[in-house]
Amino acid sequence: MSYSLLRDFGRRIRWGLVGGGLDSIIGETHRLCARLDNRLDLVAGAMSIDPEVARETAEVCLLDPDRSYADFRDMAEREAEREDGVEVVTIATPPHLHREIAELFLDRGIDVICEKPMTKTLTEAKQLSDRVSHGDRLFALTHCYTGYPMVREARALVARGAIGDVRQIECDFPSGPFMQEDPDRGSRHWRFKPEMMSKESILGEVGSHAVNMAQFVAQKKPAALSASMTILTEGRETYDDVQIAMRYPDGALGRMWLSFVAAGNEHGLSFRIHGTEGSLAWRQEQPEALWLRHTGKPAERLTRGHPDRMTPEGFHACRIREGHPEGYILAFANLYRDFADAFMARQLGTGVEGSLGHFPTVEDGVDTMRFYEAAARSNQQCGAWVDV
Image (cartoon, rainbow, N blue to C red; front, side, top):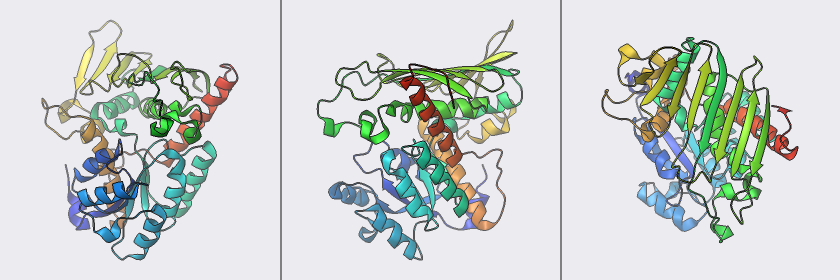
């Protein structure tokens, strides 16, 4: 792996964090992944709406107390005024705040890495996309599972025609740990509060990953869908099980199952892509293997770790030599590495191997919200087929 960009850039990128405090589910993951490749330094943050949590997190992260902010608005303004202010900020708050926070930093010339779902509504997503394009800023969405080597390998194999023309696309995310609703509404995660992302918030939480994964690997966008959503848990205010059928412009078909109540499941993200000559299958809980099957031939278990048997795109995501398992943190860190490389290449005025490095962009966020709103519309019409 080449570190020439970092060498030429001569320092680490100054990085800030909004949300992601010690009480956050995802905050520590972001901090680990951003540090992994030695490309970013956490120098500022507004890491919780709780002042005490924000202060404690800043202390643990060894931040200068003057750069630990109680409010993200204050952080955006003051960091933009500093010669050594943040150059990139990660947004790890609930999604109803994403657009406002992103625009504050983008308008001050600061690039953005954002948790999914990108925004609360499709209208907000389109407005944010316009802001990114007009400001010529970098924007990444943390669909971290696309950072796995064998996911990128699958995408490259589909593009190379390894399974022929894609005809069927299945991507499921039936996560199973939320079988009971928390009686204390105030302590519930945003996914179970309809005011955060609407009654269909499951589409933004696990659904956004499944939608992005299917599009990333198959390199197709659905033209129409039919969705059926259900609440299976007593006292819950948001849908917790979703079944979606999809049709693609070229005649391909798709299916998606999303659930918070698939009892016995741990994580659940998986895909199966069927073509005219074979199929590819992958599961997040066994991420080292990608299964390639052709009719009338033995199944092939493709594994990561060696350039002679992987595509360049797949091998680019590998960190550890073959026989030594990689995992979620390294997959997530691939997005940070590729984003940082794109940032440094832009600042240096040089190119970067765009066919290898990949991170989901603001347009992926728009696609997800377009799917989200179509699925909600279909469900409201008792599963009617609607255009995406």
